[in-house]
Amino acid sequence: MKLSGRLVVASHNKGKVREIGDLLAPFGIAPVSAGSLGLPEPEETETTFAGNAELKARAAALASGLPALADDSGLSVEALGGDPGVYSARWAGPSKDFAVAMEKIEALLREKGALTPDARRAWFTCALSLARPDGTCTTFVGEVHGHLVWPPRGTNGFGYDPVFQADGMDVTFGEMEPAAKHAISHRARAFAQLVDSLKG
Image (cartoon, rainbow, N blue to C red):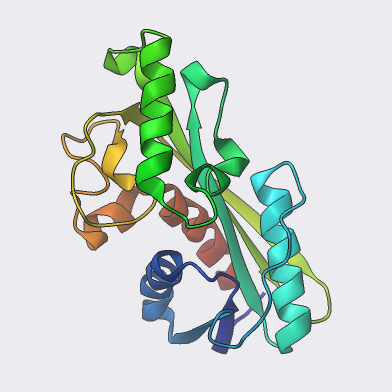
């Protein structure tokens, strides 16, 4: 699936749009956000990251008449049975206050006595779906594993980044410069698969 010109990033999350824009920049693709086009956010009714990404990509492609790239991503915590998972954004409430969500996760981990890095294993998942107005859609999934820290550290990134420390790193995603995070993140890993598909 070749791409050029304009592409809709099917998200109203400015941090996510910026990060995807950074990843697209080297390919001469000009991303425009669903929010800037006034496209409505479809209700995320699927129970998997891939299902929600496909739902959002198809809706944006159909509404805009342009190819659309949608991301559904979130944090899963082993000790919490994989929660918050696909509900990662919902845990932040209607105001998308991730400080509240991070505190909720920390409180649940403390209730379980999960105080060591091994007891606080977690991973980020990103599903990227690329849809065209004709309904064709391809999805790529990337993951990055690590553990949660407390208190939150760093003001870069967005969402749960300040409490996630990837394996092999001594800083959180919130402390990493964007280029360093892009090199190892779940989104970058899904994006690498997308790029490989565009070369075909």
